[in-house]
Image 1 (cartoon, rainbow, N blue to C red):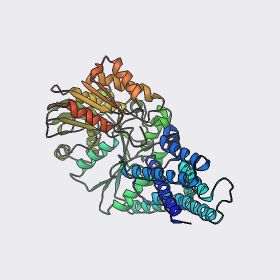
Image 2: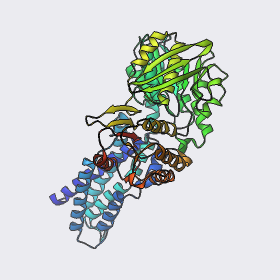
Image 3: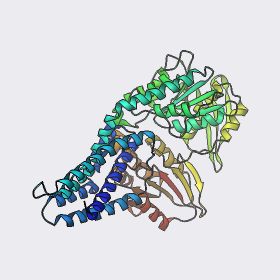
Image 4: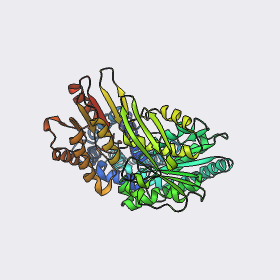
Length: 535
């Protein structure tokens, strides 16, 4: 094999390896779940310009339009350009090279690179044996086929590794279970809900830390493996309370976590139309979230948010249950109510009213009804642990805003930024817009790509978001195409001025628009930021 072909083979091989890396990256963003990954692929990746270019190159090297050497040179140049583009591309959530990623990458690489090299060596020995197709041309054609169907190679690798992953997961599960069993004095508090669970977890940890040694699942470690990793790598023998966030994409997910950690107290923050694509119905969402309550022991304690219909109408008979709400019509049926809520430039003041005339006045740096609701759930659990009013007041006052969850900050130029970019939902987005509307000075601007994973209600709820935008904002910047039509329809339905509506393809373009219209005193709400798998 001469140097010319060697260089072309190496360049194309590098492109193939990086192409596999990208596919594994998207697999990771789809939680390694093949059905979700396949849905992402069907949503546009399979017919993307990126793969169509590979198809065009395949036809080029398989035809007699050009001399084979020239065709291979063109392919190599295109591959170099694609490698350069891959290297420069920035992702909101970079690929995390976990041990699982390395296992998938290794299997995919062994299959792809091994078969590629085998074909290259074979055709180098029998150059020209294929008649009108040369050996090198056939080799590169095979590589391009691998690139076009790299997603299939990745999916096949995942299937091959299923027994290995099960064995590894079982080993880790047993280790975590042994650690938990060795800590009989540890009390586990489970937190779940369609939204609000991460904020509630943080607020509860801050309050309980005034008296107890508390550990919580970090970030969004709310899957079984995330919980297992927390127990194995972060839990200490002296911890007395474990706050365990529990997420779910399908029925049985929360029960699986409960079977491991055996919670004594359970908080259900909300039941709403999140992940309806996988759950299909609200009843399925409800039954899944209440797997936490159903798993509690007879002496356990459930804390349920009555502000949501599918929480309020779900009976709890197996354990003592404290229901709560934020000054709503459900107050009469709730044990605890957040009342006298007042927003100030410094944050919020409110009262917690409970059984037997209980009342506790609190001040927090947080704003928004959903944050008060999440705080209320945390306060109820703190009271259950026997904390007094002064301890709770200190804990609540010391809570900082959780990044990307309705956090407010000022820029040096005098612009107020409301950052609500994480995992937007119908209830949270409406509340964020209400906070935005509370500002009376300056232009009230929203930047949003809309909400996702809402199943059949995707368009309906995003159109409703558009109507809320029309009521509460002065300027709207709609990002991307995924929810574009529904949001714009809602905005126009609300009688919004078309001159104040901007439609852009990316957040970078949104920033360019902002740079041209922002003045001191303006307020910008960033509502949701779609992951890389959505356009």
